[in-house]
Structure formats: C-alpha cells, structure tokens
Length: 186
Image 1: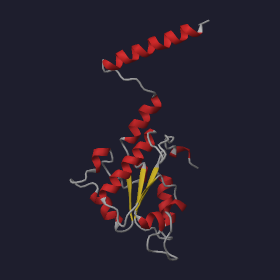
Image 2 (image 1 turned 180 degrees about the vertical axis):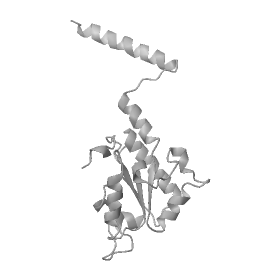
Image 3 (image 1 turned 30 degrees about the vertical axis):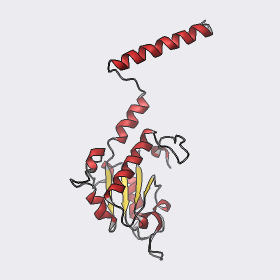
C-alpha cells in the first residue's frame, strides 16, 4: 500500500519526467483531445447557399480570404462527405424539409453555422413564406450576424466552431464551455 507522502512524491517525479520529455519535443495528450483536434482542423462544409449570403460564403474561399487555411478546404456537394452545414441566407418554408433531409444525410458528428440575419432570425422577411429561425429546423452551433455578413465573419465563425469542437470555447463570463457533442443529438 502506498502512503500519502509516497504518492505525492511519485506524482512529482512523473510530472518532472513529463516536463523533461516535452522539452525534448515529445507530446502527451489523450485520445479524445487528439480526435477533437483532428475534427476541428478538417471541417468540410456542405454548400447550402439560399440567397445573397451565399455570395459572401463563396467569397470566403477566394485568394484574399482563403478559408482553406482553417481546414475547410473544399465545399462538398454531397451531404455524405460533409460535417458542417453553412445555411447562408433566407430559408423558405418550402425549402425547410429539404434542408432537414440534407442535414439528416450528413454523417455524425455534424455541426451547423447559421449565416446572416435572414437565416438566424428571418431578417426583414417577417412573412408567411420565410422560416424565422433556422434553429427551428436544425440545431445551430454558431450564428453569424450581418446582412450580408462579410467573408471574414464566416471565417471567424468557423474559428469559433473549431474552438467548440476542441473544447476550448468560453462564455461571456470566461467559464470554459464543454466540447460540442453534436453526435449525441437526436
């Protein structure tokens, strides 16, 4: 049986060994953190451009903005190859079931970015034909404000989603938020 003092000494010895190995360039992590890091740096968005915000979404991949720097290299046309849906623009009630079907076809884990005032709140279209919040159709992880939001705003949203996936996101009080567990949604 290990005494309390022996256990502390053993822990200190282990910490010193870990620090020495880290100085040599050997990294220590958990498998969960490694998988979260890989997922956060290889987000593949599904194209779901519905209105003027889609032009700004396309502009986020040009040479000036280069969304590829953050691992979102290719917009996928097939939902089976994507793990992030970027809903860019106003969503009509006629298109909502189609969007829900595309979201359901995406493999788990999956995330959603709501881009623009129209997707987030209906925008200026407060009428019978427009869904007033994409969150009523699919669960949204990150909202991008603006009408239309600039490409830099979408890139910032992708960076925030990466933080959420890695478990490094914080709320307005500075408290650490849990990692996004999109694969647990029902």
